[in-house]
Length: 537
Image (cartoon, rainbow, N blue to C red):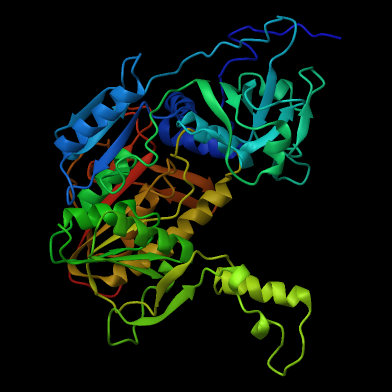
């Protein structure tokens, strides 16, 4: 039986997402922003920014030279079309904006025989968010696929969004490898209404997609948003970074010769920006608790030919050590070795310390440990330094770009996993980290606090906590000042707790980046504190 395909551009094969929130979280945000404004924020979060911001590594090149190179590359890539526009902002001389286009309305083109549905794939929500930013579809992101898809076939791409479970959690509810038949009986058929993100060409057959572990599964040819890709483009000369993150490093205002701490540094974008602003003179300490992420920071610094960055594997909550005399004491080096199994002498792996032969399972475990390095997680080849922490008052400036709910990142197609309680837990964790920052910065120094969330409980409420707890902290003016003011007021969460935000005069000293504003950025927040003579809190 053949099924007539619905090609209504405003219906099933369109991109009209609606962001769902926990009802209590929605009420909380509606109080903070106003219901109408929050509705517009929620809509803006479902689409990407209309441009990509590129920070130029001025230690290796110049903005003018990079502008020329990019223009040549884009002209070559768009020989028969208008190339993307490149622009600048005088307030940020080392930043280039490369503009995309969209939203487009990719029409659904069925099989040459109109009654035959086009072959389809369903991708995960995180995969779709990456595609909306300009990525291709990689193998792990494909959840379901029509039968008999072969390499070179045109496919329609839709996204599946998480659904609630009976236990109170969230799940995609799709077994990877599910077959789609192009009929209303397909899994999540109605749920995909309005979640069509375009068409592409299969790079693998259906069998290949679900057997391979990596690689491009589908190359997108007709997208909702067209944003240039900068993979492997001018490596070491440019860094793709959200505009508010670029502003954050400048607000810190690091000076040559100073000692700076980046408490939560991965993947290294702000760390390298700080080092470049210091002209690679001084010392930038970068922390992360993940071996692999520390390796990524070191790799980026090497790629950019930056020498003043030292990266350590250390949980920022353990970064203060009042017992050490050397404020930069290193505990040990943790190394993981890349092992060539074909050339490895297994003699020493076959017996334990008492000379008894080991089972094959234990031998395989030891092999993995040799290949992946110590610890619970597989580690990349290379070594990183562990630190015992740092003495109080060790740093001239501290950047705390805190782990957060990330509710300002875009595009975002799902937000209902956050509850009022989970948002409060984020805030509690951030206050603990901020306490460490206060201990580590010297009197007369600077702390910059930032997040990529729209949640005032992690932003304005943190500033309120800081000012009320530490009388020697004051909010400082920021430059450049591109974002808007903070949120004033308070919110009664329950009968026992009211969350306090900012006063009018304080709100003008912070920067809040609103996804609805003309800047068209992610949601972001920056606060800058001057540190006076310390005393007990």
